[in-house]
Image 1 (cartoon, rainbow, N blue to C red):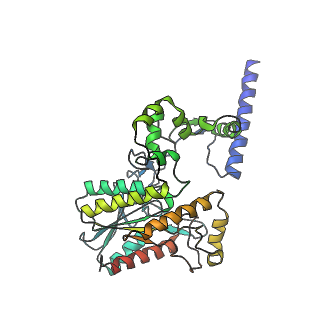
Image 2: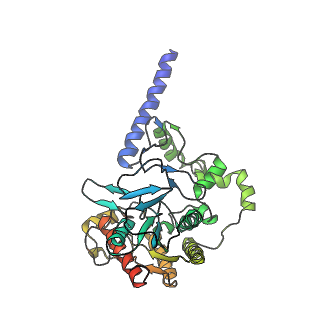
Image 3: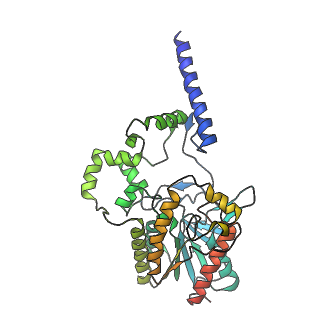
Length: 372
């Protein structure tokens, strides 16, 4: 009798787990795992490590074979015949990340712009590119990465180029990152919950996902939201009294403050610093009849109803700030009038789009006489 009850309970749990797994995988495209969800351990350069000062870093133990160069200590050194007299360090988020190189079944390929910039340097100029971009980097992370590079490099770059903007918009960062703008949320999470976010082993993840979606309608979601859970904790009260807080600056204000700090640091070491406000799908200055049918489909498939509103409100402020800085170049409309497939997804330009970006940056460097 007891065995039958245990078996019946197990079959009920198993059935709910299976149905939940199939439902969220099929209709929500979520990788929730089945029965046991463990941290994903890819033995390639898509593997990331926790970092106290940055959003994340690549695990350089695993090698990339598609970057046309070598990677070391979270920098990509592209193959280049030029010497080290005119090194250019590139910074940015996943749109710059040199570890990324993917291709879809339909032929749409993702290669980042520093790769093409290095090709131009190698073929027709005297420069060499070292790529320090990394997935999810914001202007805050770029500032930290720049300082780390200066502290540890035997040969400093002559120029630093940042392609940024998209990761510093409203809705992309957590509220705690706005309140405590000097540290990534992963660091805060580890401090309060004593574990690395997304690194826990979860049993019956389908059932937990199903119950969470139901209980969120009846219970304060602080129980399921790590950020709200931290804000409600007793330990946080002590830190809230003790840590300096941002009360007035929004995401755009923090973006410009971080790039100003980066500019000042670079200037102190006789490094030229340039920021390029990046293009992205959904900006109001692009008309739908100027976008290819492929990119228009990506735009129409954006599921977050607030994304486009937050994007354009944020970019309006970023564009204003950029226009006030002599070292900031607004290329957010660089694809205007180019009606061909230019995006890999709605946030990332594809191979063709990134080549256009690289050529524009290369021409700007030549106009400024930073390269020959």
